[in-house]
Length: 192
Image (tube, rainbow, N blue to C red; front, side, top):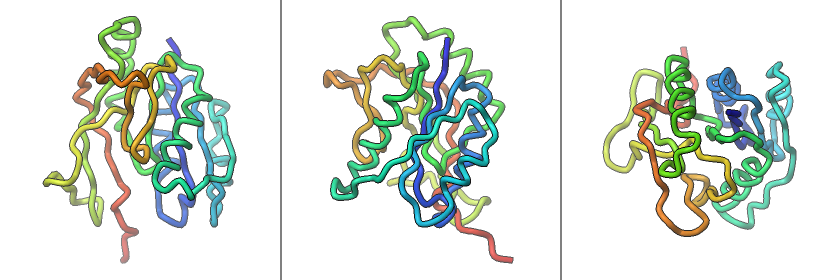
């Protein structure tokens, strides 16, 4: 079994996205990690190059923002198309997985690799908000989402890279991992 990690990133330094930590959080269980780096107004490309791992594969291109939020799905699907693993593990550049969950996730992927009743693996969510000490679980903050999909060409990103769907329109068959994604996109730099 092979696992591909993948993400998209642009202006990670400008927007304070922990993309290095995000990638490194799942890199130990990935055989490769595809990073789609959009043209940035900061040193995001150099930041990704600073991750010293032969697993990292970088795609560089100019993102077409005339597509609105769908540009994010398009770029996510471009990265997904470069993945060669049996499973594709997607993290946005402000999402992190705890190391204690990696063996659990590997075991689940092994168990369901050939199970036709499982298309993807679902995670619980913690949205940190304002600081590393508070998180949101109230209405309007999604509490679950799919982040590991079978890489069989039948699944695509949609809705601004918010989630995944089957290309044939049928519902995704999900397995709940009971593992968490830690979302840091709403954490601001700490001022001392």
